[in-house]
Length: 537
Image (cartoon, rainbow, N blue to C red; front, side, top):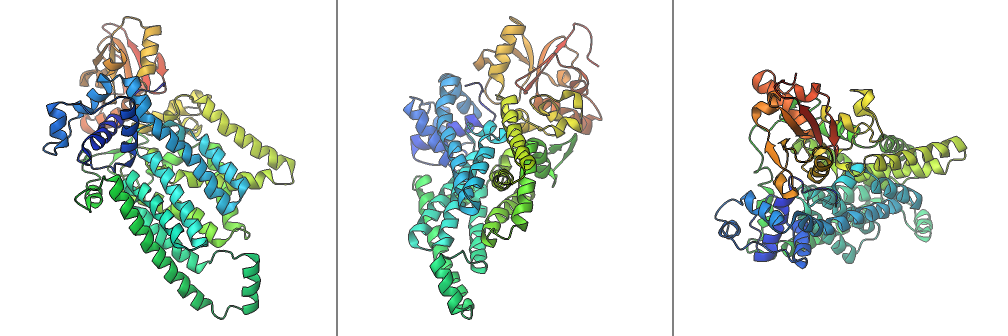
């Protein structure tokens, strides 16, 4: 495994182990437990246990906030590579399930060819690849959300109690993966209303009978459909509630999920500032649109745009299928824009598969065109998507498309697209989330053996756990870089620190942008070699 533990993973890993060990959801209740539990079950099978220390016991009793030192010790004491492999294994399987779920939904809504195209775009999306194996909640939520939409489509097309229960199970899984899935019950109600307005297609015999009978009783039919959907909606909610009780290990407080949901932003720092294109603000309403346009492959964006045009104009696409393709991503993007902090495209993961579905519609149409140049263009776009996934390997988390450099510094374009220009636009998990320590260690061993490095690190696991001899960068180092020696500075720090320093002090840290690094390791660490006695400009 080429990537070290990211910023959030140790806490999720430790929380999951505490749930399995104690049977109670006490540690880190600001995220639902499902994905953490699955990770912990895998870890326990590999011999990793909850530490029997006073600090750990106090945390599980709920008498104090969970100390990050316990999370770090679980990873470090059991061997980082061993822990991360087993902890991540279930998440890899769930992310693989996302590709199949996208195919199933595409096949149902717009046909086999579109489903295959959507699965292809999903499987080679750098953002999904970069997050797919991490012990976090975003890709897992996307998987359960798409599975829920698949189940909901099946239900509205053939109403019965069994399908309503299947919807409820998928809904419970999504709610148990991440609290932002709370949008799904109102979304389901909206899609059921859409199914009343645009009834699903009947079979041929049913269509002929309906044509013979006429449409005089359409209002009565709509009323019956609305009643049946309403009953089914109630069954879904009950089934989801039962699933949540299982996920929460049958808590005494039946409303524990809602209490956890109310604490979503409890861990965020007061006065948090979002970074976008060199500027800071509490919120940028353009953040997720900008992140999508900068971090999704340009070929995928072009295909999604073509897909929107086809879906809106093609009269052969049933209006209900059109609604299932367009309404869920629109609500998700609006919800995240209004409610969430701008700290990464990862928050947009549940909406991105819908862009792939639209891209699949475009690929199916282009490949079925009669003109050879149109089919050739589809082939070029597919090759572009593949080239992107290969060109940025294994640093998919840090991927930016070519527009990031075209708008900033075209000389930095490469097989990795515009990834070298990423810190100009976004910070945090968009560029570096602590995942590059193993690559940094390998670079230091090869290019600077025996040298101590001044490390500007954005993560939670001690770099020494990966064998890195380091001195943490001081504030003075970060602002001016005057201390001689070798620097390895996180792309997150390179991105946002100049903007933070300008707001707080009127300037500082400009050297991080103006100085040419001697290397960029894993698209995550900028390496500077500051000569003795000479301040960096």
